[in-house]
Image 1: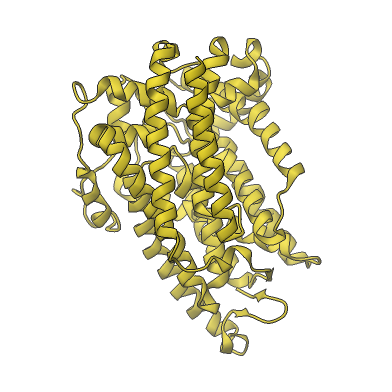
Image 2 (image 1 turned 135 degrees about the vertical axis):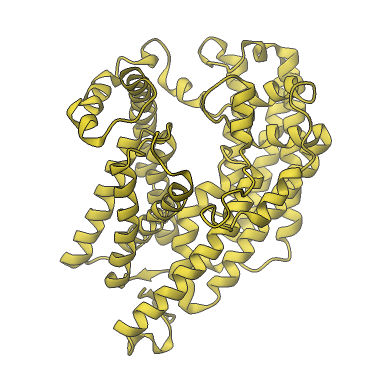
Amino acid sequence: MTILVFINILILLIIFIFLRSNFKRTRSLIDLGNLFALSLVLNYPLRTLQLTFFRDQALPEDPRVLNISILIKLSCMIFIGLAAFCFGYYLSEKNRYNRDFLTNEYRIQLFLPFWIVFYSITLLATIYKVITSNYVSFLIGGNVNILFANTIENIHTMGWFCFAAVWLDFWSRRYRGIWPNIFFLSVNMTTLAYQIMQGSKTFLMLSGIIIILSYYLIRKKIPIIGLVIFLCWTIFFVFPFVSSFRDMFLQEYKGEIPQISSFISDSLLREAYENTQRYRYSQINPVLSSLSRFAGTDHLYIIDRLVPEIMPYRFGKNLFYIIVSPIPRILWPSKPIVALGGEYGKTLNTITSVTPFPLGEMYWNGGIIGIVFGMFLWGVCLSMIMSIFAFFWKKKRYRLLVIAIYISRAYWLTTCEGTLVMMLASLLKWLIAYSIITMLAFKFTTILMREEISTGFLYWGKEDRAIL
């Protein structure tokens, strides 16, 4: 056990040195490299230590992972992978653009006509999902047109862009008029209400993550009280409520999604809330139970057992999907489907997608060599994405759009619940989508705000001020 603890302390030390070095260069804690490194810490060394010292409450995905010799082997693989990521990010970061967009002082004022129209469009997509019985995250409605539903889902997802913008606006202003307040409340109420109804831990946490990231970007300090509230909200409400809600939903409706009128009349949300406190974690420490969600070590062990005998090496063949991903499926119905989580979940005999986590994905692609090259590539890619944001931010008229996109997408770019292929594929797709939005935004606001737009939406002086 001493060797196991030593290896994981060494991993934590490497991550600490990386975070410290990266902070000195970027002067920001919410750089993508820092956020992804913290996510890796939760899913690997901390998870390994939890499996080591809290075996009875760790809720392992496979009990065999509790074997000390197995954990030592996995820790060595984790050490190699995390070191490769840090090296890849550091090496490509040294000569990149500066990160002024994360350190500048902002004073933001939203141009409400544009944001109201844009959010209304995303809200219509949400309403469509509800009335077509496609409103929960863990099932697909039986009568849903998959091709059209994918487009609707993309439009609906852009609502997080507005959510980030209103919180950036909220934290940057001392006085708010009645209409900005009404819009702020409307965006928050409709967003949070839908997240509770769709039963997703990720999306319920995402709202809090965006609020905290936007606070840090504007105020340049960590919201300690906000973090404590967010952690309590996540541990004592989100995890037990969603688990209770999903189990009750599946039991009540037998894997089908009912019409929204039937769902509301059944009061399932109220019953799930009442059942939250006595649900699964009644006999287990809720903090340790929540940490079991970050199960990167568990799935690295499972994939190590399955590859290559049951799941053959992929050797990066899914990278082709990055090129074709921006083409809407409604225009190309036969577009290849890449669902590593679905394929992995099917191997595990589950009806849902199961994330392989970063090291598991890379091991699946080429064993230990796949972990080294894959995690190195992941670090390089995140650094290049930071450079893309920094490049567009240098154009003054794009600045509010850039920081709103960054805050709304930061979680998806740094979560261990995604895959490198899907992260890069979605990035290319969203770059195209947000470019179109930006073009339409300037066309729209030029008509309504011709005199203010003559020098761009963002006025840079002693007080940085964003109008869009």
